[in-house]
Image (cartoon, rainbow, N blue to C red; front, side, top):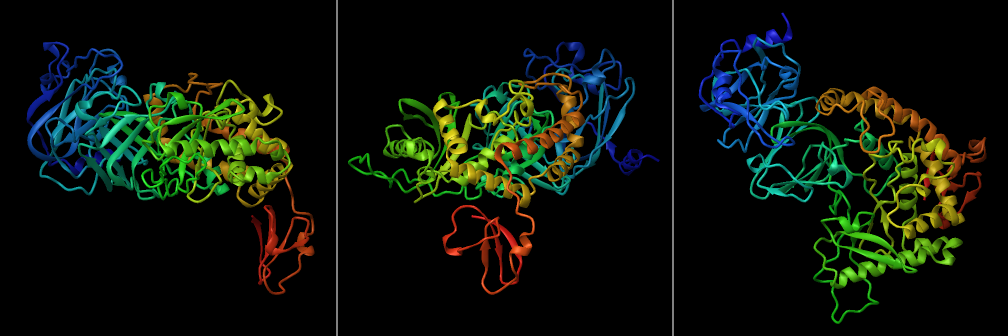
Length: 631
């Protein structure tokens, strides 16, 4: 007996349920909702719509009271290719008549043969009064016949439907309204996050829970990115470090591996960046329709487990009369931003140096007026950073750069951008200033869908360019490109420091192809079931999307490409940055324990522990144990 037959036998005693037929308007009276429950496989329900691009058409039952659904019978419409087009259609259960609390309970996962009923087991423990079939976009809600089986009861919340092994994020906007633009906000939305193989549910529905669009270029894609804003702070999944209101759903539509951000974030984590955003792969359901495999991620914002700074108090840190020479102590979060003048959130300014602007968005504090004193102080401090870094003295004196910049954070950010080959590294650069510190720290890494040679304007970067990609990529400002050049190409001490950091990452922090090959293989295995559904929903594997240089025809080929790319890119950066290797026989040069910890440079010469300059050292503790140390 098959596994499916065994499962269905458990529900053999559950009755076929009856109730009042409900549904959206049919396209004509011959295809009314009742046709889906008349027992005739030759008739069918078909909904009516006027918008080809967005519609949610459905048919179902009001059962009169709550029932735990254990099985669904489904027969596809028999004419045309409706059986194929019905794949990925969802079934929902609800306890509100308007289905505002609707949650997925089952899915049509395959093309069913015409002219017969097919039975889908349901493993959801909650009881529902209302049940329905939600046809995917393009199928017009069409279905020949539906049956629902179950037993009376409110059930419990011990088990829910999870589409794949990944967590399921399902949300409903009021009245299933379409999210029309990235700033089109829909308060009063309902959000479900189902995880742990259906055992864990996060549910929030209230007037302030909001869904909206997000992104810039990504918003223009057919698979849309979204932002969730809960009324109350939530730890959205158990492994999420932050408890926060805002979370993002990144579409990764132009990235056919679906994992370029994931790989880049691992580079950030290994490098010890001040902040690496949280990321989990999830399946997304938007108003009853499966949207695909997404990346659930932090909203990049100030939070003790995100950008961890103590912000400016706009009310307290205001001096009357205004003192243009005053310094603020509070922290703030900025973005050097090529989209600054197009953003709908956050104030922005043009920082000037030599008459040339650098566009900067103030990400936090929010709601800061351009006429306010803190706004003017922030602008002034950023311009001090530009002036100091671009001064003639900064070509030879690294301290002029370090006055306003945590140089290690910048160099790590630069290295990661070059390793992942992101042409937008300096189109959008996040940085923050902690309270009481003049230096900006550069972080986090963000938005790497064009990285790993996924941009036809730069492909293939390993052979197209002899130097660094930043010289050819998109720039928020030509003046900011001069900042990058000063640090990575002109100042000899910062170039030396970059070589030390790269060498340390290569030898001591898993910056190698073996580590990343395993990371990529593990991710591919984790999302394998979901990616199949994703590319059923969005059949683009043979299509150029956004800036794709090639369409490789399969998920496996796309994944192999980024692995091959990294082999070449590591070797390329070893040449461009340089690689310091500890000299042969270093263990013989450094003697055993003689008391307190001692420090040696990479030439094996002991250095004074009290006067260590930034660099790579070998620390020998009192037991003789050796450890590479980056100061």
